[in-house]
Image 1 (cartoon, helix red, strand yellow):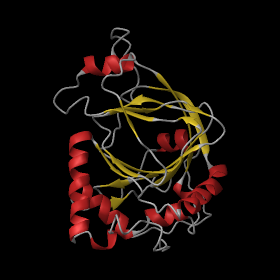
Image 2 (cartoon, rainbow, N blue to C red):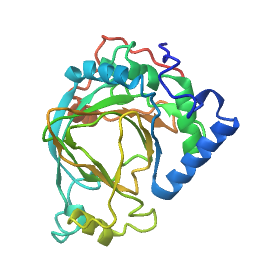
Image 3 (cartoon, rainbow, N blue to C red):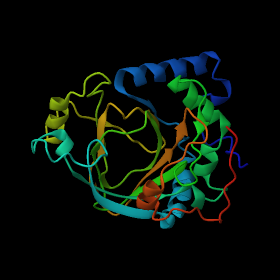
Length: 278
């Protein structure tokens, strides 16, 4: 199993090797509070500034392997309910256009892949989420993705269907590509469809922008926070690593999801996937 180089992560600010020590406990407590209060825990400078260029070069080498998909999607990632009024949030359709490099085409020497397969990172994410044991996603396509967004690409307003997403900002676009969020706009007990409809209609008072500065690790709970990526402008692509974990072992995505997002339903044999132990 490939291992991460010891100096890629800023261990001074983020002592992953000692999460039970004073600095480690303070880090985890701070991230948990931020996650509870805003739905997102941001760890800026997670990747050392003097190693960020290496991570960017690694990600750029993967870009040609991306599969691009586009179309229209809803805020709830479900088919529109046409029997509802036109302004109802469940009638909303927005454009998505994004490329994704699947896990099975990332070679083992890749820094991004090595980081994902590094046990101390798994331990950190599990500690922040505080949901019990955490497992790497068992999907050969979706366990780890590099999201590639170039000129004109965007991601429509939506809620996630999973409880959490872990992302690593690698490279910013020249313009646009902002991660916009309406934090905690709905709850498990109340959909607050009036608030959701207002944001979808252009109302901005509840909208915040997360600073996806390259090198930042973000643990995001998107099930109750409406969010989108604004249209990308310029010739520099927006690159973000998407690291997938689950509270249950062995879980994979559907063939339909694989077909849409990756353009295929069977993983490639090369480069070989070495399944890391959780």
